[in-house]
Amino acid sequence: MEQARADRFQRLLDHLMSGGVRLRSPVVATMERIVAELVSVRALSHTTGHLADLRLPRQVLERAMLAYIRAYDVDMSDVAEPLSAFETFNAFFTRALRPGARPIDPGENTIVSPADSRVHEMGRVPTHGMLEQVKGRRYRLGALLGDEGEAGAFREGVYANLYLSPRDYHRVHCPVDGHILSWRHIPGRLYPVNNLAMRAIDGLYATNERVVVHFDSPGFGRVALVFVGATNVGRITLSFTDQPGAWNSRGPTTVTPREPIAIARGDELGMFNLGSTVVLLVADPKLVPASVLAGEHVAMGRGLWRR
Image (cartoon, rainbow, N blue to C red; front, side, top):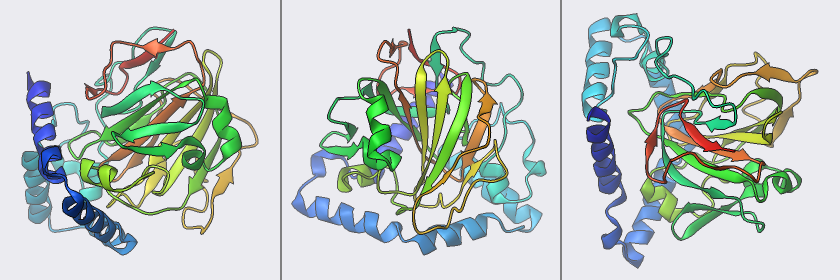
């Protein structure tokens, strides 16, 4: 019941932020593009990040956190620590959950959701490599990964666009058992990832700043998980390494560890500030959806596909 109420609330927010599909016209489309361009200025996100890291007076910080919880209907029942433990707003954004709060689907042949998120799109990767962003907008798989050659490994596999809203838990976890082979930081814009921006900006996921993590899974072959940055998400932190790479470089930076890093389903991979999007790609062509539909909210650890 609580999740259904929260889902209705989030759909209302998305509707209000997007202006409503029926209102879309050439003039509205132009305005949407202008708004998306204005809020994507990197300095805005950096300023927001700096403010979120400030150690505010305790009373001010707690009022701000409580206001945020009320505004976005944040469920605090599974959070590992009380509000009094958070010393900055960013510490609250990236809050951890208590052990066992997100059980992992026990099926051995199951790919699980890496995050609490809404499934915006989910389907099979077409041979032409153009993936659905939102109706009428696409993005190119090779551009998303920053390597056209790597894109070929996932054609005829499956993909999902998973949106983390402001109310969601913002840590991202491993969807499979396997080994991390490499990770790549790709500089880019910081457009918002709400409905308005996804309609206004073609190839948004392949335009925004992002980090691509490549895995090898014994059960499913090649897997890639893409952290897509967004407005006010100027930092993407990786949890499995203390050498994340040159995040501020002008061009893509790839890190390949000396030995592949063993990782299990449910292990933490990293975290966003505020909400953003994860794109998950799995090369296995034999996977079928595990009773999950586009538009549905899923908890981290729930099965997305199975074989």
